[in-house]
Length: 109
Length: 117
Image (cartoon, rainbow over all chains, first blue to last red; front, side, top):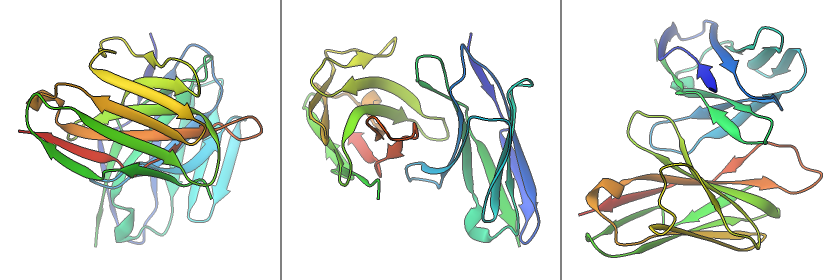
């Protein structure tokens, strides 16, 4: 079966750094996405990795290792507005997105 | 760019009635649109995938006669919840994927909160 695993909840301090991990087992791989979703709102696109390595985009970075079936989202200089759920999704061989359950990130002052 | 709109943003209807939700890609053509449902504190659940001009592909367990999807143009898809029941109350979100030449990311609409009384 297809499976995406990520922690249910994480807590971090404003101004700090947090890493959200995602491991996956899917039938085929056509890229991995990270989305941010605030409560009561739709997800917004953060990043897309299809090759191994680190993609940096401002305060957010995303890393992929295809051989390990592993990705992480790194958030630096955390702000209160970063409190949200972060969804990991993998595009399988049929170009369908397989979604993780999401990681709720709580930022404390 | 890559803006997707949904209408209405929220709706309350009586049990047994039907509700139509529209999803529009405002500044790009979407060959593929997706409909998701999300219950409180749960992840997105894909309901169906629709390609312009063809029948939608429904996920297992989703009743196609209850959730009617029409993808009549490259910028518009509609989801009609027929004979709604209280258990259909949920957050319905559409997303759109650009056609050839675009990346594979999906752009989400703002969602429609449906409450069936």
